[in-house]
Amino acid sequence: MGDFGDIFEKTIVESGLPDKTGHVTSISTALILGVNTIMIVGFGLGFVSMVYAFILYIMSNGDPKNIQKARDTLFWSIIAIFISVAILVLKGALLNALDVTTPEIVNAPTF
Image (cartoon, rainbow, N blue to C red):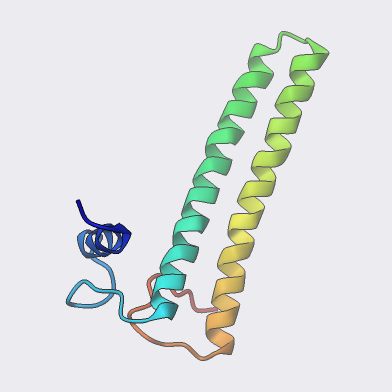
């Protein structure tokens, strides 16, 4: 069984990431990959929890305690989505400010 580096490298190779050889060639590429992953997971969890909040609200049958639970869940799901979008904007602003145009960087938005 390999160590964490082998597992990480295998994951990078299988995901078809930046370098033609399948290796992360720089720390910046690895950081952008991590930021993209955090952003996607955060947005996905926010969306799923928002759907869950709506289901809680529909199933509450007017019970104030359950309605409050649904509102709290909705609030935190909106916060998660907001943070994910903020990360996208900050990433794009930093990449543009640093004039990063490297094609290895995945999903580098241009504003």
